[in-house]
Amino acid sequence: MKHALSVTREQDFAAWYQAVISEADMAEESGVRGCMVIRPWGYGIWERIQKLLDDRIKATGHENCYFPLFIPLSYFEKEAEHVDGFAKEMAVVTHHRLIQKDGRLVPDPEAKLEEPLVVRPTSETVIGAAFSRWVQSWRDLPVLINQWANVVRWEMRTRMFLRTAEFLWQEGHTAHASVEEAVEETMKMLEVYRSFAEECVAMPVIAGEKPENERFPGAVATYSIEAMMQDGKALQAGTSHFLGTTFSSAQNIKFQNAEGQQELAQTTSWGMSTRMIGGLIMVHGDDDGLRVPPRLAPYQVVVVPMLRDTDEDAAIIAYCDDLVTALNKQDIFREPMRALLDRRPAKAANKRWGWVKKGAPIVIEVGGRDVAGGNVSVIRRDRLYREDGKLDSKIVAKDAFIGQAASMLEEIQQALFADAQARLNGSIDRSITSLDALKAYFAASKKQGWALVQWAKPTGPALDKVVEWLKGEKLTLRNVPVDAEAADGACIFTGEKAVERVLVGRSY
Image 1 (tube, rainbow, N blue to C red):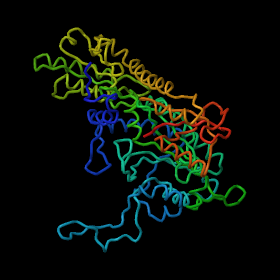
Image 2 (cartoon, rainbow, N blue to C red):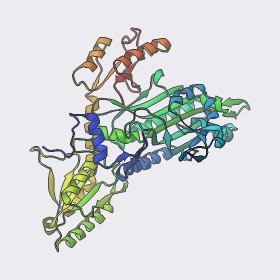
Image 3 (cartoon, helix red, strand yellow):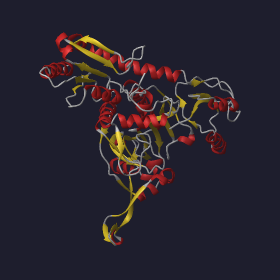
Image 4 (tube, rainbow, N blue to C red):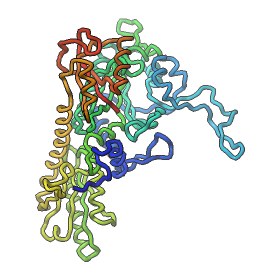
């Protein structure tokens, strides 16, 4: 069996990942270290993520807004833990003008800013400043907002979509009158992320609370959804933070309660980014390229006419036009179906394999014989080959395909999720009860997966010791699953009585 990509997952997973991005025309280097150009197919997937997630965010009562890219440095200095967490990643603007000197453009010494501006790494501080203006009374609460924006964090080791100096995301920020309301909001948005990942991205995840060392800087509690990639590594695919009064204290977000007393607001923040696209690639991709779940595919059905520069070409195009029109009149997942006729003057085989590498859920080929017989040739991207290794292209009556296209797309969505769910379920070891066993598990030849182990929830120096040991094994604590079975033994790290179970694994 010959695959469309030059490198397989088994040969080199990291190189395969980059090959998928390149061959699927998703993104490319920009000329600026750590920044990428997101090409139309990659950005089309992001637009689908935006639309579907935005609908869910608005359904929970949040409104979209926008805050500036530049944030005064003094805003960060008000919250020491937060600024310490991001200090090494901040890009800073110090001048507002360039001049020519010795044939080069350099910052004008006379144009130095009175106060440096940080290029947005996250917006808690600037949004907190706005909340302090907006909130005066308990009647002004809750404040529920979200913004879609770009973020800059000066990463040293970059990888497209997974870790870039600039990335796209949404960040939600809310303020509440009570701890209970803020915690409820934090968990509500964690569930929004979980359901979105599983229902739309077809990516099974484990939702849970991050250990203390993995909390967002300044947060009281951080929750995440963790997805398992095909190489067994974990990807943090979305986070929701209960911030308590950390930022409201620093930014003076106070309100008069119903009894006339002044209180600090309880705040939250939560976000999901273009990192989700990297996760999609590593969860669903195969050795022929990307496989996009139908709910996220910019085009769910792509029709490729097999033209031969003959008189029958016009009839083939008309036949395909009619097919695409009929498909686009149908609904799928409560939206109009998205079908495309690929009219490019390229060889049909090249176009077919181009769409295979992009991961279009269904590729249809139509030639003169298909037109004469009233048929189409159907290729499902979720199961590309027959048992004999040949391309699985089925001849189906055109009208029959139109009638079954929606159900076929639903099957593909479900099949991709089921495949990933089986991989996740089969790759978590729940039997490990000692450090030696944990070390042996991850040292095993090509061992892929996570371990769910007993955890005493150590803090301070005891936690530092655990983290240092894990670092030596290139492991990390992922999260404490919200639905994990109760602890019933000793913590494998401290020997103390366990209070919960925590996931351990290698990660991106």
